Figure 1 (cartoon, one colour):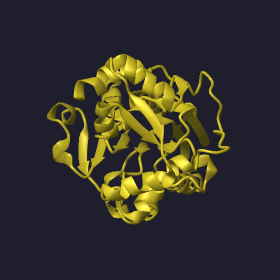
Figure 2 (tube, helix red, strand yellow):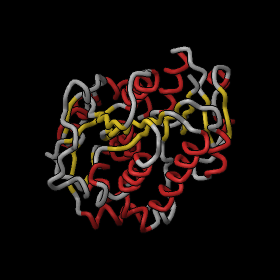
Figure 3 (tube, helix red, strand yellow):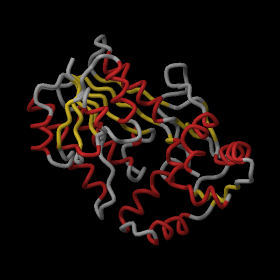
Length: 289
């Protein structure tokens, strides 16, 4: 089986790459920065320079592939949803030109809304476009990444986290490594076809208050969480240099799921993974604090 991976250096892709290598697959890694792939990994993979926003490059890079793990690449531009559309054009072009048989797409909880969830709306557009292709596709509806806490290291150091969500609002939190494990199992399993949605909710639903308590206990110092207004959060995004539309799209990922949203898939053994936040903190967050 020939498998391509986009964003192989991403939070999920770095784990997925090594999992497939251990399974005996020589993956094709599509990246804008081949020089950043470690030599130890490159020895067991085919590394191809390709920009996921460029359909011609992606079509060329995926020739001969049986399957692909597709991630819409991160964007910080003034037109984030436009970037998602360009990424969608790339994967659709590759599927159609190269007759790729199956796609595993890294989507998000909230994409089932289709509209009104900020940046997640871009993932929803990719889902819809892939559903219209003649391809077997599984959409991974992932919960909130543990690794998002790495973006708040300064706040964690000062013991003061901020969110626009109510502190007691529960949501699925998940380790990217667990997403990679689910993705690897689906990619290597030949006994599925047509369209599937696979939610990945992590081991348990957590509120921001619970996360603050866990951080306090594991760091042995108090970490508090404060709910701030949408306007305050938007202003913070603008102050760090986000273009206005990017700030709005980022904010919308929280505000769009804040009131009345119910995930399409419930928490079941199928959607529950094993890595808990406490263990992840010791492996990945505490060493960099």
